[in-house]
Image (tube, rainbow, N blue to C red):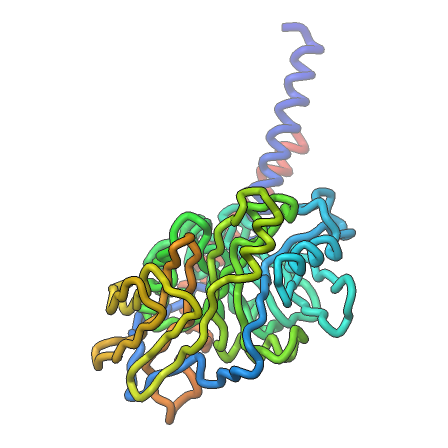
Length: 403
């Protein structure tokens, strides 16, 4: 090997090593985090039953909404996750009968394209490699900090609590598709008010029950997570129906934090025939009545379902009724919570928010987003370890540069 070849290989090695060390150093710099003493799982308890539909106003009806929507943006990012501008995406949803559309681009606040009074400051937070993403509602600016390798539950919790300081509410996005999601993690994490449901893989939403069974109450939304509005099988297949006066943010915030809404999985009617899709989306089954009488929860639908199921603690089936529009279930003293799922003949699925035990003399709801306790000693030791790794990587990087 001649001198020029050795020099070229040396340059290639230095460049590759320097690049890799720089990447590892950047990743390590995002890993600083407190370590928490997570609250022990504590199933819901109390003499009262929380009714998320206690303020249902039948004169308002239900407004159809999608909250997890991507569009083309003008921001600094070189790659757009959707080729269509917000006005086009909004138009596509309105043709499908949606009343409310919010734009949740990654780490970007998107201006409402047609009506400033309907502006909702919401974005999808998260760059990390595990797709641990959150919808952040009601913020004034984007928070860019994110652990790139959130290996520990404490790192996930820290991101959630850090975002919550400047937000009205947070949705945990697509847990089914998030790396590292497990029963243990879901039993620990708190700080969110809404769980995103139904990734398209399963209608069971077990991860929601892992959290609910540990005493982490949350409402639920099912969203398209839309990227391609021109694909019929990607748009209008998840939706939510809110009992809210309008799509203005103050009304939406109040409703989302109050719980008076339900979610649906909707088939891709027509399988590409948009005329059929529009017609079928205009006549979806809906909730006529839902609520609580004494200790009995009840649901009445506009159309007959193949089955209506009541799910409770540890994802157990509490009740099942077939070929019916109605189901009432008397919650037993040992029932910690209960939620409805209705399955329709054409494949549509409807999900209610959970009814849960709590003590009304202590709090207004079972929702508890109090900060988790920080373990000071473990936090110091962990962050010293991260700092040592950063120092080592920086030392190696400088050595490679000088070599």
